Length: 396
Image 1 (cartoon, rainbow, N blue to C red):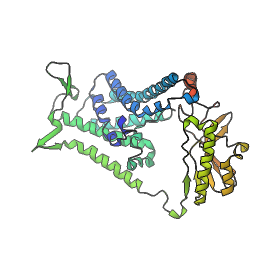
Image 2 (cartoon, rainbow, N blue to C red):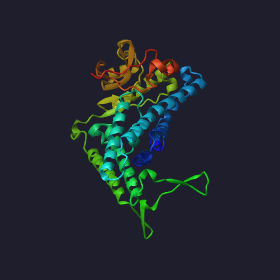
Image 3 (cartoon, rainbow, N blue to C red):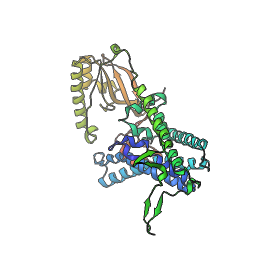
Image 4 (cartoon, rainbow, N blue to C red):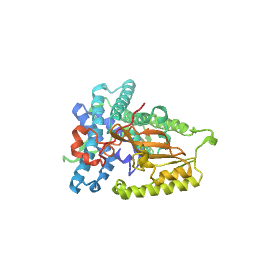
């Protein structure tokens, strides 16, 4: 499952990568084994998907020694990996506890699928309420499977997660049915490995009941057609949503110019970076304004200044360009909330006044604030170059 995210981006593997865990959790009799299976699977997925966090090293530009920078990066990676992996472990444990012990009958199979989907989605919802949640299963489809991503229009990204689990669950159930067909023994007693020549080496093998061989052609067991049909159904629904235009009236469309400054972190928050950012965004704004755009958009914290202070902005060449060209700009900068800063997006009208303001609600852990600050703050507080910490915006 880890290969579904960057840099491999093999998103299609997400539709089968959970099925082995599904089968093994059902087969194991001991609850601890179920828990450990989920934990190992979770470490594999979240560990690979979140490896990018080690890119915060080196932090020498923040004054952090090289060795301490390595330690902080590894700690962050291991901590957030385990935070995600424990979700899978809890799911595997609860799923194993709640599923029926008998494996015969379509009703039990349907109940397992429904239970597995519900448990996972509920746990993801709980985890998403916290600060350290990046690697939802829905992330595996971003940003290549646009058709499936449009299922989020129905009920958010949890819809994509539910679709992925449904297909994997049906594949797992199809495998169980194929392996158990014509076999009177309990599914838990079916072994998927054996020792060869009395050695300790385990070799995986599969019984031929999974496939029916006919004139050298493999005919897939009929129970696998349901997950295939379900997969196609989800993509058809997503494709129909994909083709619905967001704005059917093209005459009311806005022509928006976007500036990407590409200022390296090493210089972003010193005088060199500030000067480069201001000059770069000013030049970009003027070029886009000359192209008759309706508005200009900059990235978040593109101009890292306190924009609510008029004295700060009126001396900026970017601000003077707005007064000159009179094109609305959405500017990423810092706002003020009590004694703390906010990561804000300001609408600057053609008169240079702040027309509206949006404060970012979901801040990036470790990058914009220190999660569990009371516990981890003293250890990794140097990750934040700001003296006053960023705080999330208000939802009202």
